[in-house]
Length: 161
Image 1 (spheres, helix red, strand yellow):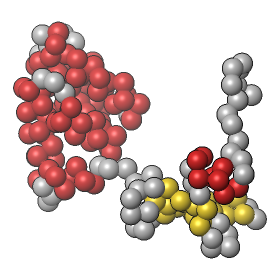
Image 2 (cartoon, one colour):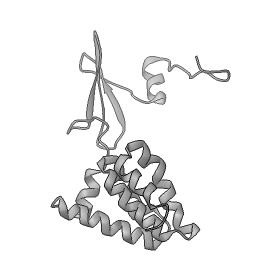
Image 3 (cartoon, rainbow, N blue to C red):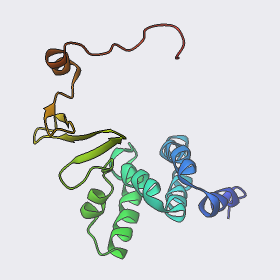
Image 4 (tube, rainbow, N blue to C red):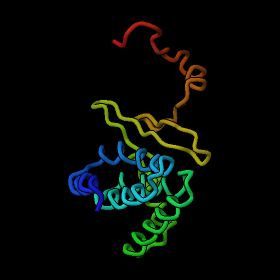
């Protein structure tokens, strides 16, 4: 065991989603610095931390990292996790896609007290909004200005309000 392995063990035991977000880029860079073995150990740390964020980052490494050896090791780990869950690696990858709170129709109800709106996406993934009266409204600045006459412009320059 390397003198620094205790740190990786500690990350696996006590790490959280923020740890994963900060650690995943380090794992991806290690092979370029001659740290392939350390990067592979980092994959195990992600698995030990667990959770959706860790699994998403592990899955990203299977497709996005430029080091084939690390990609292969990540694929092996994702394959083993998928098998444990009774899924194929592709099915597991599909489950990692965020739904952003949308229902099965691709819609989300936004409740603003006396006013409520349903936001969603059509078959071409164009956003739309349905008001409380059931009328579909434009959801893009270009379409909104044509239907409502104006679209608020973001403030320019200066500091945020």
